Image (cartoon, rainbow, N blue to C red; front, side):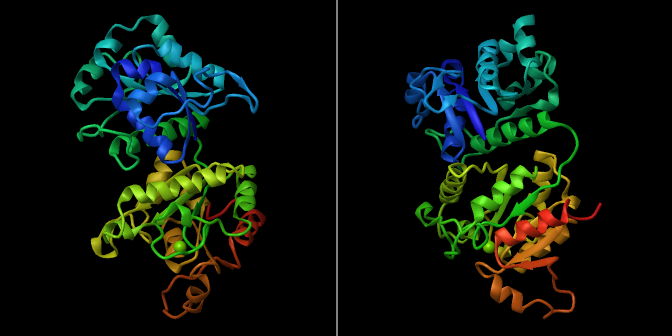
Length: 365
Ligand SMILES: [Mg+2]
């Protein structure tokens, strides 16, 4: 996702949102800062992509474009203006109940000019229920009870909350009809299998991956990564390392013209009994809710039979690729009477994408 942060508005009253936005940047999203000086002091790792020139500035690479603009309830009109200039259709605001109570028609109009969502302190919930400034209550999320991080942290709940708020707003603005998606395993499917990969420098795209993802995007399929990362639960590396590696993947794909719709991963050990580890489908269900996806018309592609099972458990197609562990997994097909049987076994991701596109809309009606 591409986001503009109205840092000037946030520096005065919402360092929490500012740090969460910097966390988004650490997660590999394209974050552009308006008000560079304030950002550098407050967020820690901010950078102004356009020298503080502001949204809408023409650059050698063309006018600035963004999907979402991030600001605060202190100046929604100026934040919305930044969004309009950049072609953003969505706005996410840090709300302060006292500010919202004093909003007039201009501020309310600014919020209605874009699809606006918001985040607020848990202690302000009741006050915002009484005076929401015209915002639908279901669009107002609450920060977690955890204190904000002392510096930008991609693994902190605030970063997660903001990422989800932005992605949900973007998906809802697109329309109400659920869309079919392609869910992709990461290791051994998109990138070379390394065994508990945690070093971003080890992220290496498999041949043809970027081109095949561009084809999926051009055909209208949102591309969503769903990954088991039990190395976190096993204590091999902290969760922040997964975010760093995912950020490298996001940025590498963006440089090749691919924007991942979202990234989800399970950090738990296999014996933790969680619902999010594949072949559990909690992450697919979360993605379906966040991004308005139609699971039964979607497909899951991976290099393990548990990826195939995940797809089938969700009512979607399940495809196995022969990269990563795929060849040895293929030997196990049919070994158990009720074992997973892929809808297709393909040499690699480009071949799987070809199969999906030829078939048309995936899954059952
Ligand atoms: Mg894999």
